Length: 87
Image (cartoon, rainbow, N blue to C red):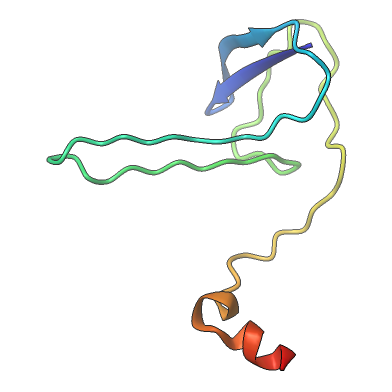
């Protein structure tokens, strides 16, 4: 087993090999300099990739394990409406 990273559909190489079984969770850490305060990270776990990887080194293209519909950001939690409806 291995983990590879792709940027705009282009493989950036294998980051980890021979992983032990278990759960792995995606994460990002961002550090910016004071004069460069803006930083953006976007995860796309499929199945609708914006830049679908083309090269899997003759391996079959992986299928998504589940279909998760996109619901967007639910701002009810941010403004407290979700908690008010429960009481």
